[in-house]
Amino acid sequence: MADYQLFIDGAFTDAASGETFATYNPGTGQKLADLPKAGRDDAIRAIEAARKAFDEGPWPKMSGAERAAKLRRIVELINQHSAELAELEALDSGGTILKAQMADVPGAVSAFEWFARMAEERPDRVDLEGSPFPVSQNYIRYEPIGVCTGIIPWNFPLIMAAWKIAPALAAGNTSVLKPASLTSLSALKLAQIIAEADLPPGVVNILAGPGGTVGEELASNPLVDKTAFTGSTEVGRRIMQLASGTVKAVTLELGGKSANIVLDDADLDLAAAGVLWGTFFHGGQVCESGTRALVQRGIYDEFVSLLVEKANNIVVGDQMEMTTNIGPLVSRGQVETVERYVKLGRDEVGEPLCGGSAPEDLPDHLDKGAFYRPTIFADVDNKAKIAQEEIFGPVLCVIPFDTDDEAVAIANDSIYGLAGGVQSGNIERAEAVAARMRTGTVWINDYHLISPERPFGGYKQSGIGRELGTQGYDIYRQVKHVHINPETSGRDNHFHYGVLGV
Ligand code: NAD
Image (cartoon, rainbow, N blue to C red; front, side, top):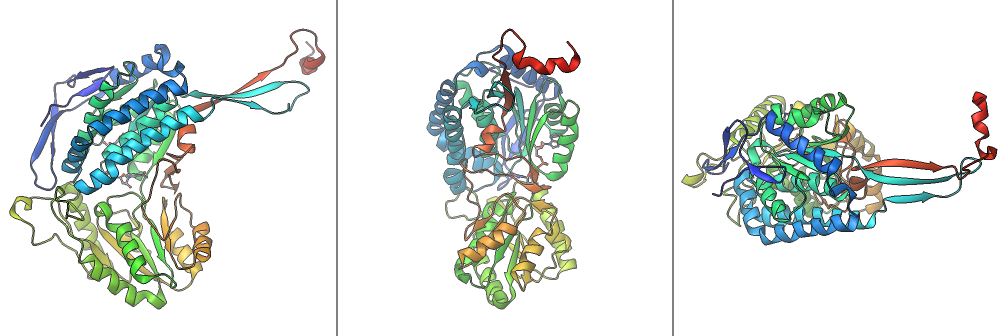
């Protein structure tokens, strides 16, 4: 495996302390690489480099079209390295190689492409019509915010890195990124790719290291203007506190416990596939997973049987095999979290209808792997802990309801509000339900489809602000109102100065 280093101020370097940490394949338990473990010193150096690049360098002054050209160069290079990136992502995160090839690498590419378009197409000056004062000309300038830090989780490392770096750069900011310690490989590989694109030094800095030191520095350092965080709600609260010291702009993409509502007019086979796809894709380690299936009582028994029958056909195994549907979870620690919740579920609800353990028939080379079977609890009370708390693993709670009103009430009875689904044969009825769900995304007869071209983010404790879409570009820009009084001498249009008698 190639060597990886921190990327600070346009150069590759080891951690100042010389410390390293190991990263593993969660399927086999084999070590993949030793990585430099950045500390606060490295984080401060990266932030200072980004500050200098913003205050003195050419990047924020370049035109949108010039920056777009650089982002497109990054796209070309990602495409050249796509096979290696996909392999690293699958090996390190446990996501399947199919997902890495079909979603992770193309997802990173499309984020850079979209924000390149935004840099070209979104105006950085808008003249305002009319005047609210006797005489004035007014316009808005959209300006970069400054130094933007990004802190990301382990479930979609490459895509998350792209979602933080691409919009920041497109809008003229400089960036410092910290990937999650369990999955830093693809971000460090991305650093090598970005280095090839020859951006001015300090515009992008990427460092692997612990949240408690590097992450805290990125969220609190006074030289930072904005922090964008994706991760758990618990750490999101801490990020807000840290950022409040210098009142930084904050974007938070946090946890979820999304409801996928199955109405009694749905095509049951399609809806069952939709619910399983919505829950078990990537082993349920997706923030917007539909981990609560709300099923209308008239179809409930038949639907639950279908779910269990289909769930038992999902192949759990080596993430590097193209025939595998779900690879290992990200770590043994994550399996332990799932086991704790399944035990709680057994106490609260009873025996799951399927799953509830690791697969028994895995080949020898996977016997240390972090595997868990798709697990379904039926007849769950929405007040149960397994229906309220984010598990972040392959566990589905099925909850019955009678009326559409009740489905909406149960769906909204959560501290989270990231996403949700409605499965129905009647689009009008589904839209009426969707309109009342307090979440940032609702998929009707679908799930998990996210594009950089559409905004993504949460209501309630699922987050603040939106990433992606035009909103996800504008959130990386400051708004400056410029007012011009065209009267350069005389007082006809300055009569308000008379209020002071001057
Ligand atoms: P996490 O909150 O434990 O860690 C996320 C990142 O924060 C990591 O890089 C970690 O090192 C860092 N961190 C930890 N403590 C920190 C601190 N005190 N200060 C600064 N940084 C700190 O989350 P995770 O376990 O890596 O990922 C799973 C979570 O991420 C789930 O809750 C999931 O819902 C959420 N998530 C949300 C979205 C979204 O878009 N809403 C997307 C993916 C994942």
